[in-house]
Length: 195
Image (cartoon, rainbow, N blue to C red):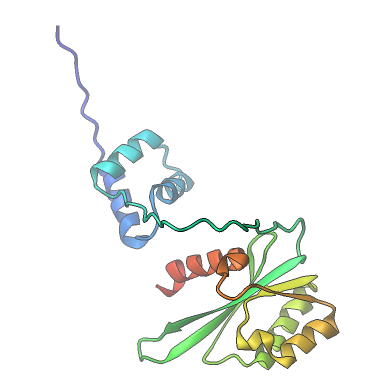
């Protein structure tokens, strides 16, 4: 007895996956498939996954083996806007070799980027000026979470928080996971914009 074995033409799927792999190399299958569906293409998830594997695009995840920390605390999710804002700096280099910094501010409730300021240096006065601009159009947060950078422990910044009635929450040294929302934003910003 003979059964007909249909040959599937996956050239369109292959071309689309190769395009995503070239333009978004740090993303994986879930992100590619989500974007394919957003484009209105109705390819079956299993089919796209099969082609993805056939092209050898699967990336092995790095497994970090660490001693578990007994005092883990969950990062609290704010229940409304303007409850907690997170601030952090990023560094990068221009083609000319000159270094620049970005100050990123997000609202932890919806991970909305409230401001991304780019400059060669950020004294605490400039950070305060930027926060005042954001507060002018967005309203004042109840608390601001940041690391212990010199700009955030300066008298100008502490005075601003005190005068504005904003609680300044500083994370422990060497514990960026305590400011996880902004760290995740920074990673996406670096991968999608700076790199």
